[in-house]
Amino acid sequence: KNEVEQSPQNLTAQEGEFITINCSYSVGISALHWLQQHPGGGIVSLFMLSSGKKKHGRLIATINIQEKHSSLHITASHPRDSAVYICAVRLGNYGGSQGNLIFGKGTKLSVKP
Amino acid sequence: NAGVTQTPKFRVLKTGQSMTLLCAQDMNHEYMYWYRQDPGMGLRLIHYSVGEGTTAKGEVPDGYNVSRLKKQNFLLGLESAAPSQTSVYFCASRWTGAVETQYFGPGTRLLVL
Image 1 (tube, rainbow over the protein chains, first blue to last red):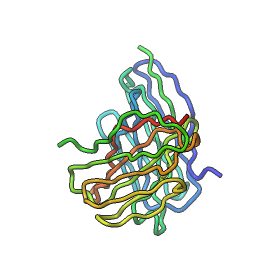
Image 2 (image 1 turned 60 degrees about the vertical axis):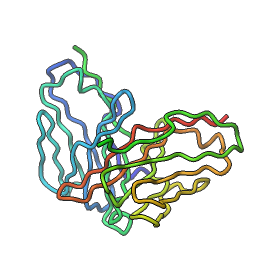
Image 3 (image 1 turned 90 degrees about the horizontal axis):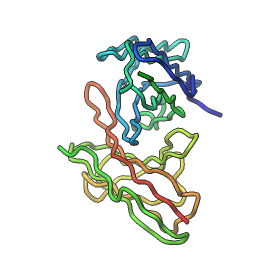
Image 4 (image 1 turned 180 degrees about the horizontal axis):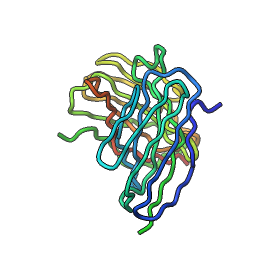
């Protein structure tokens, strides 16, 4: 059973397009993270959300706690945005209080020039 | 700051051999984590530590041991490597400030033959 589901698995876009990546979860959470894994393998944390919306540059992350759903949006996409985007949730239990995360399988984004 | 570093970057082992992966962080973080990443799966937590001298099991701890003798170092050991342990291993440390963030190392690619 996958507690964190991401869609789509793969996404190809043209430069300049608006991109949306979705994350749904089936458990009670205390926080949700979005991460980026570069083609070389490095992983960088983008956002941590517990409610509402956050924006950083061209990236926007939203979360709806009632619907157990989060979205990551990229405006004016660029080839350098090509990466795997990973959603991870921190459960509202003891493990979660230790910072333990459950990860989705990732969405592979390719932005063509 | 070097952030989170991992050694080695790549290793090939024969079944039954042992090895230790080293993770070091220079950010004075209390929490540290070891994950494995396998194709088609999300990152999975192997072991974690909430401070010097403490360790705890994660989702997939079997076949691994860990130690946190110094705050800045978190070691992952494989006592008797198996082909099922072929994976990419990531270490992370966690900042618990206003915006909780996990900082990841560059990864260690391990091949067990």
